Amino acid sequence: MKKFFLLSLGMFFLCGLSLSFAGGGAEGGSSSSAQGGPWVPSKDIEYIIPASPGGGSDLWARAMSNAIAANKLSTVTWVPTNRAGGASAVGYNYMLSQKGNEHVILAAHSGAMVSSYVAGWAQKFEDMVEMICILAFDDVTLCTLTTGPYKDIKSLLKAAQDKPGTLKFGSDQRLNSSQYAYEMLKKYAKADFNYVQYDSSGDAATALLGGHVDVAILNPAECLGQVNAGTFTPVATFATERLSGKFSGAPTFAEIGYPQIVLREFRGISATLGMSEGAKKYYEEMGRKVQQTPEFKKYLETNSFTPVFMGLGESQKYASAEMQKIADLFKEVTKK
Image (cartoon, rainbow, N blue to C red; front, side):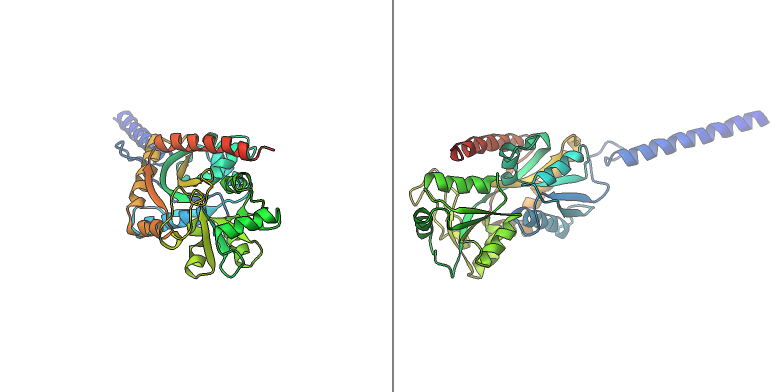
């Protein structure tokens, strides 16, 4: 009887121990429910911004995370984290180092993706992240100081044509879509500016405000405050048609005789490579939900974004095709 009791007791502890290990493995290795339900995050999301504070990607990520919090779309916090440097290479390399991490995503911007094709990165963006979704087109403008000598795009271009290399063109970094826009101006409009590189578009805007450059290339979100204040004047857009609101007075380059000068950027979110399908689906659906919130709708409208939705697969295919097209054109306009 004693032996039977000890044997039963031993089996009881063994079973309990086995269940303990099984339960612990499920909790630590996956955020899916024990019944095989949809993936959900188990800790805060690190939302990587591959640029300095104040730029377009920074504003985008913070507007998105704020909308998520305001509408209680997530049980965990989305934490915007700046990892700037190397024309966005620092942020993308960090994503690569986090391969398989389901709690790290990136504020995707086509301007940074171009760098992976033309800046000599060891990998293209597809080798470092996977697109989850594209949520908006973010068309680019040229701004001048309202109190400065250049009140419109024609006078600005004429000065750059008449005095090659003297007017200062403020931009974020090199070997990205901003430099691509600059090179198109040089090639097609024969406007030769002195390219001045900053760490972010926010820094370029500050330089324009201080009179250190004559013109800056900025997304609407990066200059809206100064445009509203009447300090900056948007003199042209690289879009295919005029923007709305405060930017409606800025003509397209096609309108002034340069139809080749077109650049359309896009924004969304990207995942680490090796992320589970369940986690990717979660972030895709989150992008769709955020886009429908009042706060994010207002952000898109106020900053002259054009809303769009491309999900898994479609966004990756579109981004890759666009980057290759821009890379090919970049090689053409920079050809000596």
